[in-house]
Image (tube, rainbow, N blue to C red; front, side, top):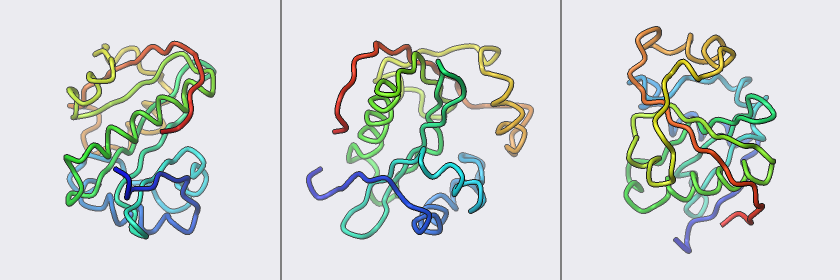
Length: 162
């Protein structure tokens, strides 16, 4: 993992980030976010690069003073299976703890991956309505969601990004 660098992306990285998720947006695995939406939420993203190429990213979106959501997790197909997604999730959890949040939500097709971080399956009724009407309504699968909702309850002790 030494050759990979985790960093906070800037607005100049948005086009590369959009290109990375294009295939997953087209097949409905990730919601499409235009450049302006990504720009307004750029601070929520964490990216990873191999030399100068962005090979993955994730966003930690805050819903309330208690709840954040991990979303838009993507790793370039050529780099999957190398622990990059796990590293992005781990750092998102650390960031949530450092922000003093109590819970982290995820809607995903990768249930086992998130369960390896102690996320537990929840009923979708526990998802905030603000999430449904801001994000889910834009999904090509709405209103018949086939993603799995999972939640992690955090113990709040600050840690450094790894």
